Each structure stands twice: as structure tokens, then as C-alpha cells.
Amino acid sequence: MSEPVSALGGASTSGIVEVADAGPVGMITIRGDLSDVAVRNALAGCLISALPATRQVMESGTDRLLWMSPDELLLLCPQDEVAARTGALSDALKDQHHMVIDVSDARAVFKLTGVEGALRETFAKLAPADLRAASLPVGEVRRTRLVQVPAAFWFASDSEAHLICFRSVADYVFGLLTHAATPGSEVAFFD
Amino acid sequence: MLILTCPYCGIACDETELSPGGEAHLKRYGPGSSDDEFETYLFHRENPKGIHFERWRHAHGCGKWFHAARDTITLEVFGTYPAQVTEPPQDVKDAISAKHPGWSWRDFS
Ligand SMILES: [Zn+2]
Image (cartoon, rainbow over all chains, first blue to last red; front, side, top):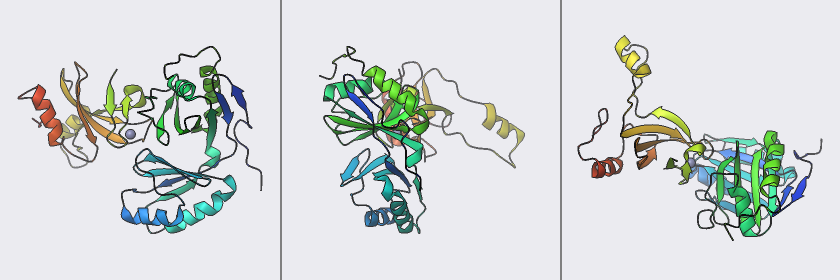
């Protein structure tokens, strides 16, 4: 089987924060009515982590489970587990109205590291989102747009953030993040 | 700047994160309806200076359609509510009545 290759081949850049291509990441979209007890029970049987509440990110081992909408979750896992996990989820949900699909090759993931204020500022320069810690605490995902393209980002800790966008715009997003993190461009609004 | 709170994900989004969906609570007239009904359904829209009900989609967010009641002059938002209803919930009507006693919009008041 061919090796998974991320959109930017491990590119990284350093400015007021470090921006790096997170490499190949397994991503599985799970759709179904998350308010339905039967769907929740089926998912609980084959997901390591508890189901996230609205806008939450659950982390468990190498799994991260993101709340995307009232009927959509995104599971991030090691790419070599995707086939098995997709199969297990499809089996568990086979009696429910659902969709489980491997979107690993359709998306790009970035990892941003640095001090919290600079991380929040980098996103705030590009998205119409409220980046104050009270509005976007650690462990909560924000789907929004990054200038012209859809994106989702979250803080894993106060010094590390992750961002997902469509693979086709990975280079554009990398350019945006690089520019927003240009040394000397600090606004220091969140410090 | 218009800011609407999405009733599905709870995010207070500015309008650039949303797609407008036109007038809310339209009743669809299709096959079997009269020409007048079909014409009204297709073309006749409210265009008020004041209270208005609209559909919006949280396009750059959770992707869901929702309803909003707002004032087109002041951009005051009286409330947002889910799409799966055929008329505004009572609390939204009450919020409008508090500001504009005796208001009406199509069949609602
Ligand atoms: Zn939403």
C-alpha cells in the first residue's frame, strides 16, 4: 500500500508562533443524530473516549473526538488505524441512520505552538471568531473561516493549538498562518 | 455588523460566517396550487423597514439552518431559533412585543 503523504510534506515556519504541518493524521467523519440514545450507545461501544458535549474536544490516548455539529463528530486517530476504526464504527451503527467516512486525505492538519497570547492573536488576525480565553477555552473547538476558507481550530493546552482545513487549501492556509505570525507583527491584545 | 447566535452550536457569529437564506416561514405551493398561490410563493416577499423574520445558515460553522427575528433598521436581534418550526416561538414574539407593542408581520403578531 502507498505511504500516506500530508499536503505540505512536513513544512514548518517560525515567527511569533511555530506553525507546522502535523503530518498524516487519520480523520473519520461520523454523522448521525447525536441526541438519539441508540446512536449514542452504539458510538459509546466503539469509541475510547466519552462523546463530546457541544463544541467540546475529547482526548483519550491517541484519539481526539471533536464535536462538529448536532449530527457530526470528527475522530482523529493514527492513520494506520483508520480502516479498522471505520469498519468498527460502521458495524456498530449499522442499524442507525448514519455515515462513517474516511476523510484523512481530504483534510490538512496544522500544529501551532508558542505562548498563548501569540497563538490566540495569530488566529484572531484571520478569523471572525472571539479568541478570548473565556470564549474559546482549552478543549473547545471553533469552526469558522480563515480569511476565505473554512477551518476548525482548538487549543490542546495554553501553548499548543491545532487547525484543520481542506487539503486543497493547505498551502493557502500555511501562507496565511505564516503571514499572521510574522515576527514584529505582535499586537499583544491577548497578553 | 450583524451578529446572530446560532441556536445549534451557541456561537455568536458575525454575518461573514453566515449565509443569508431570505425570508422565513414561507409556505410552499407546488403542483395543484393556483397560479396566484404559486406566484406569491415564488416572488412575493416582505421588505419591511423594521421587524423581519429571516433564514440564515451557519455556513462557516456547524452548517445548520436557523431562523432569526431582527429589526432591519437598528440591526437589533430579538432572537434566533431552530429551523424546524413553522412560526416564531413565544419568547421571541414576547421580545418583539416588549419593544414594539402591537407589531405584526404577515400572519404573526
Ligand atoms: Zn452553528
